[in-house]
Image 1 (cartoon, rainbow, N blue to C red):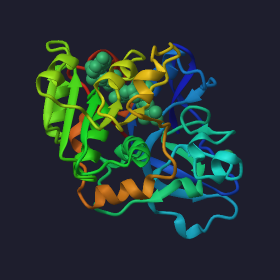
Image 2 (image 1 turned 60 degrees about the horizontal axis):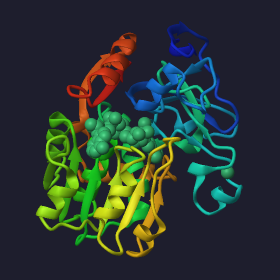
Image 3 (image 1 turned 30 degrees about the vertical axis):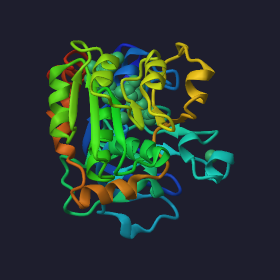
Image 4 (image 1 turned 30 degrees about the horizontal axis):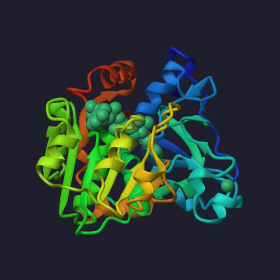
Length: 337
Ligand code: NAI
Ligand code: MN
Ligand code: ZN
């Protein structure tokens, strides 16, 4: 089989490899489509602290179960599935309280384990979620990115009367915007970005107010409009944003963070405590695939809006390059097998 292998940082090869055999409790998936994500680019460049090399990248993928390991019902063969990349132990403290996404021995398919940019991939059987026919192969790899939105929304508990502010309209911001509008019915979703093309996608994703913060400083604009957001998500993930978010927030607001910067944020206790702000962090997803499959089935989100490009597996390097260097033209890239 063909696999996209990062041999070591900076070295990508489309390698001919043996098909993996599913172990006990595992299934093998014949991959049909996969999405390119920032972390694939980071692993390629050696900027992901969790990655081990050589590694088959890709954690957003779907396909058809074509083999099962010991203890897995052979009736699963032939099932179309989307694969949750979060592999957890099931019994540590975070697992025991429903947070397998931060399992003490967390392994992420495509990061710690070989992933989905490959003609075949193995995964624990319980990580392979059946797909209804109405979810096409083209959008199925988008389920994983939407589970990131489902996870942070699970913490923030959006309400219809919220005034939401989203920093950043990249794939992550856009999935959150679509969830806030289409799933939670939030009345006002304000989006700040610096790229007109991304703001256009935010518009197509249901945002109510777009602010180009390279043209109009956000604090100035929100003061002028007398808007105090009650729910803020930092999907741009710059460490300076938290301080500004605390300043702009309404008393009793909730702030969601999803960044992994190692740089400190500068924030006073006063700016948080005086308004009794709540800060939530969110990593990956805690068994949110069934929820998001439901969103797709009911048409509550429009995953196709985010997909700007599709390439064949052989063109993966072209896809990665475009994804990394042309955010103005490119949002989500899907690889076809
Ligand atoms: P992206 O880079 O495509 O999107 C970021 C967007 O923010 C861009 O459109 C950019 O123009 C905009 N931006 C940058 N600085 C800004 C600022 N100061 N104000 C407003 N907008 C600004 O990235 P993507 O894929 O959307 O991911 C966003 C972040 O989410 C990344 O830092 C990534 O590490 C993180 N992430 C976190 C996950 C989690 O589970 N916690 C999962 C996936 C991604
Ligand atoms: Mn991803
Ligand atoms: Zn665990």
